[in-house]
Length: 217
Image 1 (tube, rainbow, N blue to C red):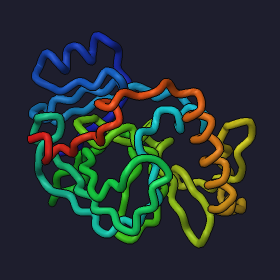
Image 2: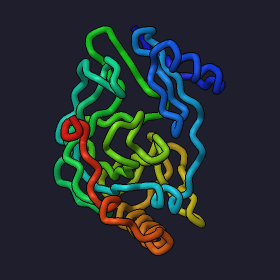
Image 3: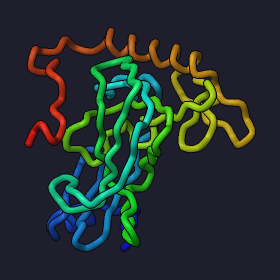
């Protein structure tokens, strides 16, 4: 079974939800696992400042383990990938420890959310998370919230991050030299500081950490 992902209209999303699927309006995602179909609308491009403002957690980490299995996603049976993080260095929020992502491969069965980056054991990553609770995808802007770090350089969507100009993250072509990790982190930390300066003060309840799915149950 292949779970395909493609753009659909609002009517298509409503139909999928009516047929028994789960809907995440913030991303424009609806899927009905018993039909074996998933849909996704496009995601607006974000500047680094916009991504920083949306992120509840920003963390540099290593993927200690990533494995796919059958489980539940938004209350529906689906293939999920369980990701264990270690060596976490939070830039905002608390260490995450564990993520459950929609999609993966189990035997001949494959499910995927188009645009969601895959995380593999051993990856060094910088993650901007919109939350670790019940979401279709926890990454800010889907692919815009995952950066891979290799040999002190920065990559996104399999392409080198070559610069940040007026808040826009510029991706290069194959063969172009990526930014140094330290230079990109300096841009990100500045964006986080600007976002914090303009954010309204939170109440005590809002400052409480987001419960993980297993804790919520």
